[in-house]
Structure formats: structure tokens, C-alpha cells
Image (cartoon, rainbow, N blue to C red; front, side, top):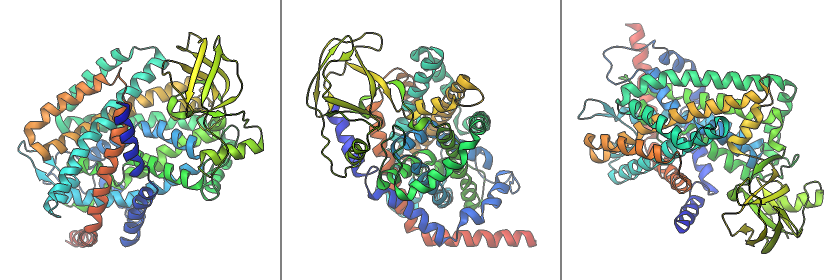
Length: 555
């Protein structure tokens, strides 16, 4: 399993984690923004009118209304990335990461406009009478690249488990256990039954549920975030200033945070932006293909609203909560994750300017004398006796270290360290350090008018966001299965999807996350390649749409 995990890590570093991937993603969005003359700005108001039902007609073919299609797509994008993903980006790239998430969203509004329009244009009615669409259909029917369509569809099925099902319930179960003390398996049983009741009813039931969940969960989360932001209102100006300033100068080294290079902040911000709003990934077009519309461009315009709501509104609120509360560069007592922890040779302090510079260079690959620790740490009653090492956790120097077999049982003995990593996985490390992901967002939500009760906003948000994401991705997966094996494959897929959802509530999904990270890129790159090939057709489609609209007005 370790070898397989390392393989996926290597593959991901060559794809999504590569230097060139963010430039490709932003580049396509920038190209279409200029090529189509800033549609995300010019058509925004018209998109709102379409969603409101102004142009709806009963004669239009499809399974859902414009609003329901938008809600389903948003339920897939508004998920744990809006809570934990933003926090992770800031904890790695600093405030600058938020700026690059904005850029991904702004240009992603155009990318989504294009991919949704083309996917809706080449959708098909299936054997059971429902609509099926997505990038695999235009790749097959228009580009005559069936092999590319198959690759995309397979990656979609994998991603449906890797991003939509398994990690979502895993996050929910952990959050419910930490906040309310619920057993993970019990959480899994209840939510798996609810998930089955929703997705077995198909797109109409999914759309009906998501159109109610999405507005509710957005309202709860936005109100909770504003209660923190207004409580720390004096920090809003400096927070915005730090986002813009550090986006072009490199992330600041503030408090315990050791900073990240410009390239690192840019890469993380863009990648987290994609993970959050999915613009360019090709997933949302599958939901929009179900919309009742005879003009594909009109549904493409609806999708412009997605990255705006998901990233520019919700992710920005999360970012401002974290930055204005100041928790992003504060140390908290926490359990150290192995993936975020490194043991270094020698003593370092983040209170020393010289040490901070050395550690910054080490973390950002700028060349440094800092080296990983190799040797043995002697521990008595949880405390290290030798002092010839430093532990970095979440880009900060860890303090008040404690070693244990579990969080409640202290360890006495030798701790072997090789290349900066503790060899024995059964030994846990705790202490004070910066925190990241949902834990960081939870800390931030306690710094508002609600006090410690603010943590319940995050718990409820995670529950609703993650569960709705699982619902939406089940539909993406079943449409991909419909393309690959026909309508008869949908029910077995749904059963397997629910079973996997339950299993992941109490299992380790690390390997699945790694596989999904690769699958996301395997979806994104073919989709970006395809819409670039159809750029002229897209431009002509937009022109024809406005001509028809003007003609209808005059008649």
C-alpha cells in the first residue's frame, strides 16, 4: 500500500502538483476571457435573470430547472474545500493563496461558461428518458475522440469516490466524533441510509433535495462567518492588504508561520481554487446537462454564477474569518499529523531571525544547511531527554512536545527517526504548533460573537457541505457509467457508491485521496484541451444566441 501511495504521490507531483499545471488552468481561462470579451462580467446580470426563471418554457427538454441544475452543481463544488481547503491553502501559502484562489475563480467563471455550453449542446437522451451530458459527449460526438471520452469518464467515476464519497463521509464522521462524541460507524449508518434514499431516486430527487440544502447551508455558514468578521472588523482592512501585498512579494513570515515562496503560494492557491470550484474539471457540466433549456449558451451563462458563489463569496468569507481572527499564525495544542511533520537536525527557534531565514529557505527549496534528523530520540514519560533536534509541524517550530502510544498514554523508550520521519507509526506526537485545514477554520470561528459555540457552525457546515457534495458526485459518476456501460450499470454503481460511503466513515481513505488527486487532473487536462479545440464553435454559439434573443424580443 505504501508503494502504491508513493506512486500516486509521484504521479500527482508530475501533474496537479507540477509547476506548469496552474499556468495551463489559468491560461485557458484567461484566453477565453479575452477571446469572448469578458463574459463573466458582461453576462453576469443576464445569468441571474435566467436562474430566476425569466426565460423558462415548459416545452424545453430536460430534467431540472436552471436553478435546480445550479444547485446540484453548487452542491458538488461547495464542500469541505470551502472550509478546510481554504484553511489549508492559507496555512501553506499564507494570505497570498487567497488572491490566487480569486484569480482561479474569476477566470474560471469563463472556463465554466464554455465547458457547460459545449457539454449541454451535445447531451443525449438515455434509454430511461433522462438526459446525459458532460465533456465525454462532446469529445465523442464532436471531436471524434472516443478514447479521450472514455478516459475522462473513467476518471470521473474514480473522482466520484475519491472526492465525492469516501473523503466526505470520513470528514463528517471525524467532525461529528470530535464535536458531539458520535461514533463514526453510527454516523456512517445514518448518513448512508439518507444518501441511498436521495440518490436512488435519480436526478429529479437529487435536484429537489440540493435546491433546498444549498440555500440553507450557505445561509447558515455565511451568517456564522459574518459574526466572526464583524467581531474582528478592525482587522479586515489589514487582512485584505496582506492578501494583495503578499501575492506579489511572497508570503509573510508572521508569528509562528515561516512563510512560502511566491511560486508555492501561487501553486497552492490555484490548485485549491480548482478543488473548490471545479472550473475546468468538467464535472459541473454533467449536472447542467440535465437543465431544461433549448439554448446551451443560456445554461452556460447560469454556470458563470458557480465560481462566484463558491469561491469569491464563500471561500473569501472563510479566508477573512481565518485572517481577521489571527489564528492562522497562532500555535495551538494539537496532535501532529505525520504528513505535516518533519524532524530536523539541531535546535531552531522561530523567534530568531537567522533561524527563521534558514527554515524559510529549507521549506521553499532555496538551498539551506538545515538537514533532516537521523538518529534516536530518548523519551521518558512522554518527554524527550536529548535536545539535538527540532520538529516542524504545519510550517512552524513545534513546542511543548509530548510523545505517546495514544493521546492518553505517554511513551517511554527510544524513538527512531530516519530522514526526518519517525519510523514507528504507533508513536504519536503532540504539542503546540500552527494548525491547518478544518481545525484551523474551527479555531477561527470561535473568535467571534458566538465564542466557543462558533465551532458548531463549522461542524454543521461540514456536515451539510460534505453530504451535499456526496449527493452531487453520485450523479456525476452515474452519468459517466451511463456513457461507459449504459443505463443498466447505474443501479449497481449507486449501490456500490453508498456501500463505499458507509465504509469510509470508519476507514483510512488516504490512498483514495491520492488516487483522486491524479483523477482530477486526468479529467481537467482533456477537458481543457477539448474546449480549446472548439473555441471558434463556442464563439459562434454565443453570437447566434444573442441574435436569436434579439429576434424573439422583436417578435
